[in-house]
Length: 453
View 1 (cartoon, rainbow, N blue to C red):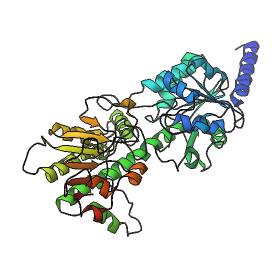
View 2 (view 1 turned 60 degrees about the vertical axis):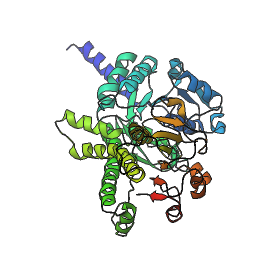
View 3 (view 1 turned 45 degrees about the vertical axis):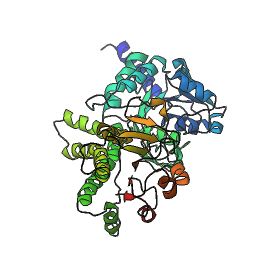
């Protein structure tokens, strides 16, 4: 190597080192959030409290609504959205102003329960086309371990023409929002951060401290942070599956599982879980990412797969229970009217996507029942007609009903519905299957053929 070549190489190393050291100021960085759903919008609002925050989404109607102070998901108030620091846009060029880009797009599963990475990969390409040198790209979307570095990063580099670690940086911070729990906001939940280098991790810790008051945990690598996310929700899925299976066994033995849980909970190291329908876009989806990762390494992940199967069957157990109470001598429920209280996948949450209440509805409808559904909280913009339920605006609309099933315990239900209001729309001692313990059990047994887990 010539002296000139050596000098040039040394100069490049020095230049790269200088560029590599550059990170935005975490206190003043302009933050762009890609994907303004349950995860992205509250995060955007949080960053907007301390500086300019840009919200990007491909849904034009959503962006138009947010600009008018309307959040269909009910995560942010009109007052939150009126913050002059907040900007909403469908124009990807706004990303060019961002020092930090946070990806909060969904990662659902496709047919066959395989992870669908198309949204997060499309977001990566879009960001790459508009990424400015020195920016930091952070992923919050749930993914298999290794996805951020092995699938998203190459697209960022390819579409931007920039090099990670020299021209820009990447990190991962898994979302932990809990839709419907308004007392537990994004700032109240401890957050994991991980960067491509220790310096990037330090930067992310300082950056997210602008929003999160509950504390930050620096994971040792991006892969560890990715794995932590899917483990969190898979653990919950497995634990609920155990209780759901115990519910079925104990019910056959004429034992109430909630009584068993209360007794077992008197031991100091017993972890309390309750039976229920597991739906939505986190707990019932994330285990499939773990199963997908297992297949890639020749592992069947039997416990995870079994738990998913148990939780998927729980809706049919609830329908079977009602069938036994309503028409034990018949193979069908033809001619019977059943009211299902709840369509949302979770209490106090309007989202009906992947709600297992519909699995209960479908199972009853497939048996010939006329099924009616009441849920004043649900956002039915995603409702697919013909799913077996007639939506009602009031429980009296098609009364009387031969039976009622409770699949949600919204605050509005607790406030407006009680034993006496339900008794007004049902014959005395008609079946009431109360999966969510909405009404007082002792009082309910005086009026209904009452069952609760």
